[in-house]
Image 1 (cartoon, rainbow, N blue to C red):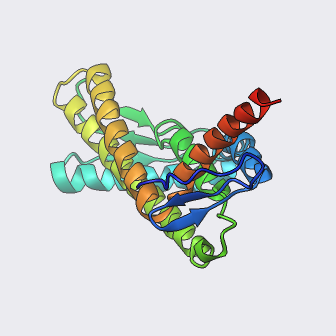
Image 2 (image 1 turned 135 degrees about the vertical axis):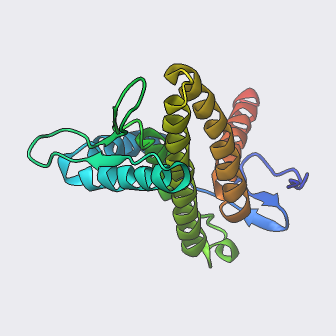
Length: 222
């Protein structure tokens, strides 16, 4: 992406030209993005911990167990206790270290999903009319594919974590190693999708930087 180098008068509405498209945002849009993203992230995170959402943990546990049994023949099964407010767990027979693994909020990467969902939901559309036409479609496509991709990567991460631990690799070592690897891959995956289908997220951040720089120049001329 290359920004046009055309200088604008200090009192003119800020417009950014990138890749032949014009982008402009209101101050209100930028404020909502900055303040709303962490707030909605927290709300989503705590919402995912409610008992009504335990089907997500159960479904994730079943997917992990399916992978363990299909790929590694580990005869694992999911233990669900609907009468108590506890997370489902995966039982692995003859495990040398630990037979039960509870699938909790952090296991399903709820904090990651909360941030990604809130960020994509609050990304503002450019007020330049030509950039608005397919904005909702691009946002929906980015949200669905990002969430699905990270979900699948996380399920396989947990499955390989349990498999390697079953084979004797210390839990903390393999947990930290796979977490670090998945964090890098997931970040690159998300950035690539955002750049391809929803560049407004990066442009709006840069727009804020330009607004601040512009205000400083105006203040220096007073």
